[in-house]
Image (spheres, helix red, strand yellow):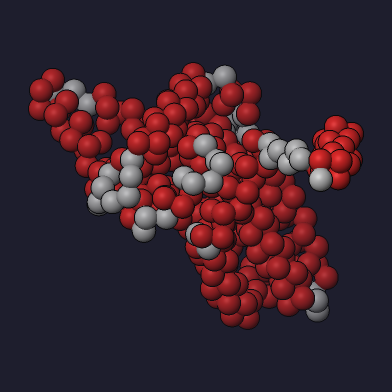
Amino acid sequence: MNTRSNSVSEPARDLNMNDSRVITPAGISAIQRLYWSVRRELWEYRSIYIAPLAASALFLIGFLIGTIRLPGKMRAAMALDPIQQHKMIEQPFSFASGLIMAIGFVVAIFYSLDALHGERRDRSILFWKSLPVSDLTTVLSKASIPIVVIPLLTFAITLALQWIMLVLSTAVLLGNRASIGTLWTQLSWFQMSMALLYHLVAIHALWYAPIWSWLLLVSGWARRAAFLWAFLPILAVGVVEKIAFNTSHFAALLKYRMGDSVAGLAYTEGIVSMDPLMHLTPGKFLLTPGLWVGLAVAALFLFAAARLRRYRGPI
């Protein structure tokens, strides 16, 4: 019996020594964990892409009906100077991009407020914490949705929508080559797309990063009414400052982060040009102290959200 046992164990020992892959499972890198965590968010929150797609479909239906008046509109545009032609032809395309960006902004707000709160409410946090994924990786994957995924989805959907609009407009104007030539030369579709990508990366991703991080922090902290807890403290700080010191520095800070002044950091106003790329000032934007202070604050909020998730249980 001992001889047989030894004869069986020897090959097994040799196999274990010679081929470590038999007993050593392949490790999963941090990047892979983050990737699959982002995939999980897309699986669970389908409104991230369904909402902008639905808005695009509705807009496309309206645009298709409006192409009935397109030949007359193009004849009127050809009687104008080039700058006015450019504004008239570009208007529906700019409106389309503005609509999809607004939908993406609203989706990002509601997603951020529900990202950590929802898993505590439905008690799925107990399952997700059992997986070999750290709280920091989970929070970073959720933060990547409003900071990375939604801006890129907005760009891709807008690009596809504007291309379909351009093809439909060309098909409607097939009987008039002059109108088609005016449409393609005055639209600057490629430059407009690059300007849109710059706006989404600079403003919606980088500049608004502390906003998304704050909403995620509130989502991980609040037991209920996360929307109120996200905005009422901000309002309270402004009111207390005004009553106590008769100043409005906090309101000015919010206006600086959310108001029209941000456009002056990323764009140069006053230039009359049909090329949207002429208005972009990425160097000035990247050298703005407010950008890097905001990113540092966003990092602190995300770190705090990860710590909260470690100790917060189901609601």
